[in-house]
Image 1 (cartoon, rainbow, N blue to C red):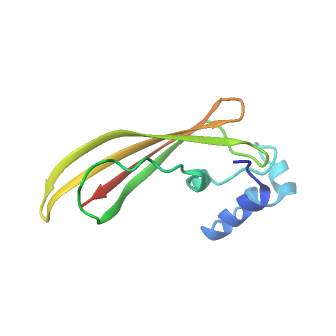
Image 2 (cartoon, rainbow, N blue to C red):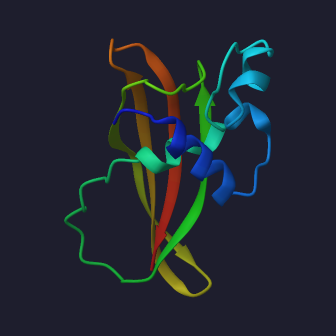
Image 3 (cartoon, one colour):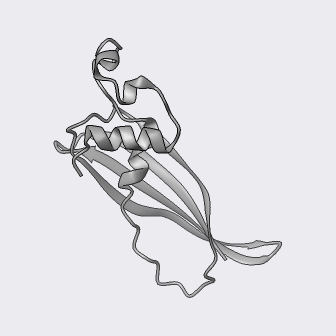
Amino acid sequence: MTVERTTIRRFAEAIGDTNPLYYDEEFARATRWGGIIAPPTFLCLLLPPLPTPDIDFGTIKLNGGSAFESYRPVRPGDVIIGQAEYADVQAKQGKGGGMLIFQGRTRYTDGDGHLVAIGTGTGIQR
């Protein structure tokens, strides 16, 4: 996906972040970043789907949390590619019965193949 300035601005508005670094070119140019950058969680928009595991289990799915390690800012014009994989799948027993805990990892690279960020997320299925 090619990152566009309007997409960055709309994302910042949607999450309630009014930092002018995400939409005001004049302000952003005067910062250490030298121009508009995307909010740290912007890459959530680019999360590629993980393949559905071939496991017959419950249909209740919960978000168990996520984290990002950023290696460089995302800027308008960047081409970002996300590659997702399962990092771990565990069966556990909880108070309400059995559940599966899935951990996924996504590597985000730019058009030249340089690492931009790594995102991890946990899903719970009952």
